[in-house]
Length: 96
Image (cartoon, rainbow, N blue to C red; front, side, top):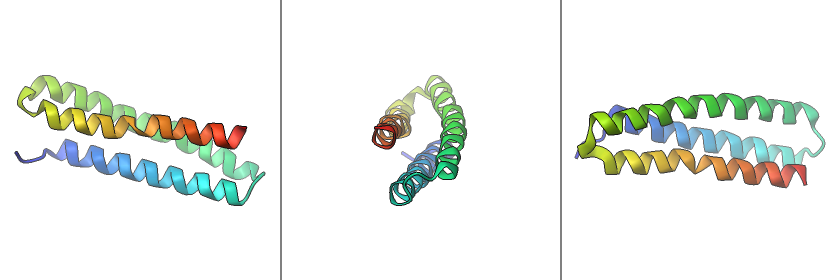
């Protein structure tokens, strides 16, 4: 079955969010005590959470509109939501 544009865009969004967040995290580990980088990271998390939330809502709506694609949509939703525990782990490492 052909993937929809929403699925492809959501997966790219999840990958870019994870990649940029990981780069910020690793940079903060190398440059410890960089307050500017921490502030940038917090702003990034807020912006990324908002953008990812839009895609999560769109995927839920798409599940109701295209029930025959529910498996692909749920996999994509899971990929997007995997960024949450990763972000929490990064925060725990940085603030402990």
